[in-house]
Length: 95
Image 1 (tube, one colour):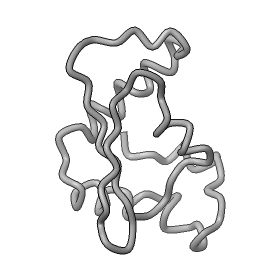
Image 2 (spheres, helix red, strand yellow):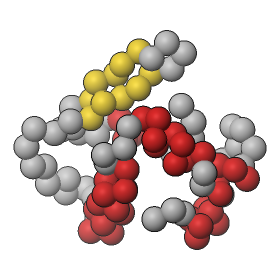
Image 3 (tube, one colour):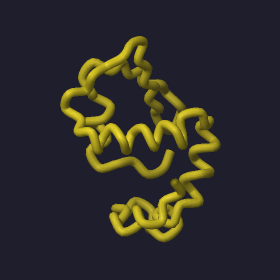
């Protein structure tokens, strides 16, 4: 359902994070859930801060709300379909 990070499979394969793959017809969705605290020693403090921002902003949104939010990002609007999104668009993120 839209843009995915390069190497997104490495996110899906995170060690010790339960991931359920769900068939959505023309695509698959992935549901992550943690029942207890995890340490994630391989993530830097900066990585964790970025993830906390994403969780705070998108964590309670529905799939449709996230899609609508993403479709309003400059990176989405100005990048041709199937093209790599340029890093310069981080300057205009809706934080």
